[in-house]
Amino acid sequence: MPEWPEPQLPRPAEVVGIEHESPTVFTLRLRPAPVPGCPLPRFRPGQFNMLLLPGVGEIPISIVSDPRDAGLLDHTIRKVGRVTRALANLEPGDVIGLRGPYGRGWPLREREQHDLVVVTGGVGCAPVTGAIEYVIRRRERYGYLNIVQGVKHSDDFFWRERYARWAEAPDTEVLVAADEAGPLWPWHVGRVTELFDRLRFDPKRVSVLLCGPEGMMAAVIRELGARGVPDTSFWLSMERNMQCGVGLCGHCQIGPHFVCRDGPVFRYDEIAALFRKRGF
Image 1 (cartoon, helix red, strand yellow):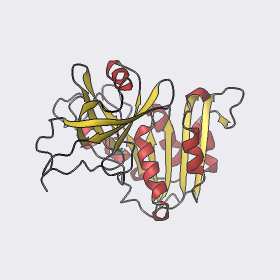
Image 2: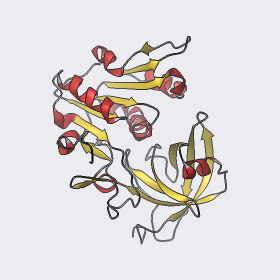
Image 3: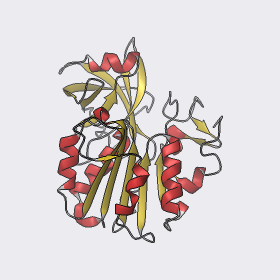
Image 4: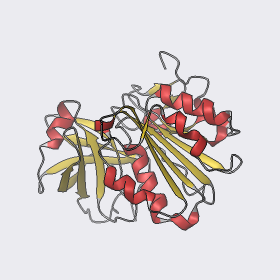
């Protein structure tokens, strides 16, 4: 079957649901319009779509749903600007433009039978949420699953029910840390790296998925590298100013790479020479 005829032409997508996860974070569920002769978009966890509101703007948003959810696409979004605030005001039945999926996702199919360490920092954990759900639904294909979430303040941790559900999966460890915590915070207070003595993995057969501030990701690479994890086992979701989604505008360039086209997921050794360098 032919693909969508023009990758830069938005496809209509209907809003079928919106869930407000916190005062600043919401999840938008979309149903792309069927087009005769063109299949619905297929994606891998870690890829993103460009969401367009005519007259407002267009932004890249990670897909957090599972590929099995045929015909439905979930996007968890933080309200930080004009477009995201407008998206938060949508209602079921509204129609927006959608382009994608774009980019390279997590290497989950290639890493079956591996132990997994997933480390996220801050509230921008959407790029790995889909990866975790993917593994949880296919739990028998992977080794031990370690999920580590760090937030600045305990009030930023809004997915408690989801993390509790993940913790019930077999051979799965869920660890949560907050730099600052309220009086009823039941988990660790401090940095996520302080929890690493509790991780279970074989350094020769582990894949580490990272998402968050680059300083945090650098600390994780340093700590786990000292525990025998090679550079080729780290995968990073990079954030840059992506405007076109297809590697034409150059806004998201990192050296010879474009985050929208060659990422947003990179193996660490591919970008190690430029990682955390100003201007890249």
